[in-house]
Amino acid sequence: MRLLVVNPNTTPSMTRTIGAAARAVAAPGTEIVAVEPSMGPASIEGVYDGALAVPGLLQTIAAQPADGIVIACFDDTGLDAARSAAAVPVVGIGEAAYHVASLVSDRFTVITTLSRSVPVIERNLAVTGLRSRCARVRASDIPVLALEEPGSDARRRISDMVARALQEDGADGIVLGCAGMADFAAELSRAHGVPVIDGVAAAVKLIESLLALGLSTSKAGIWARPLAKPYQGSLAAFSPRS
Ligand code: 5HY
Image (cartoon, rainbow, N blue to C red; front, top):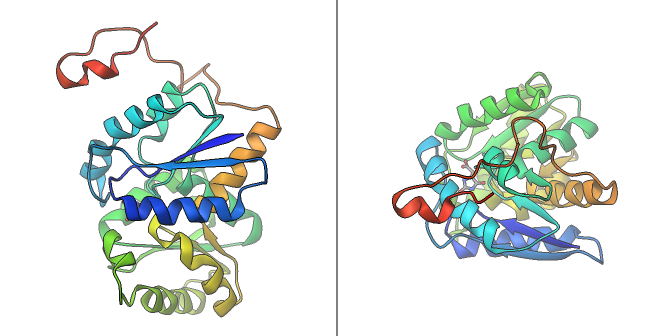
């Protein structure tokens, strides 16, 4: 099977980190195609970036045939629109991480980047129905692109926050709240002795499971196919066809 793993921001080095995390867990018969749009924000930090990332995300999805799609932004950017447009299953790394965390921990803390991402994640948790299983959403105050800067102390700061979450939040599991943290999970889980979930890996395995079960997105409700109509201006390329 061929999985399209889309980093909705336009930073290729993050896409490489995401692609490596996806390939590390992919089954032998799964091809991972990790890509990012040519237009949109360099990183997604808050609702405005999230909205402006969606056209590029949808354009990238439309251009790449795949058996399944992973949206590799922890905010699950454009997930509803992608599920409406795509004929194959689509999973966001945020929702994947919440569901997997709920199977291996009673209460999990999410550790993300900036505080502006916290309400976005809390809203997504509510939509997913797992907010009651989340002990707390913590902001590390590390900008998304700072996670991979050479010499960054991000790993240490995230590890310190994991320790505080286990001591203070009543959490027995951790969710890493940014695709850019995908390569931190194994080391943090070993260091702290609890499950630490990376959404990229979780989403790849969930998409593989959906395909193995022969399941795809229901088109009988909110994710119905878009209606054919003209779109004006630069969005004309997005005009749904019948
Ligand atoms: C992400 N932003 O996973 C989110 C995380 C965040 O560009 N990729 C991004 O901070 O909201």
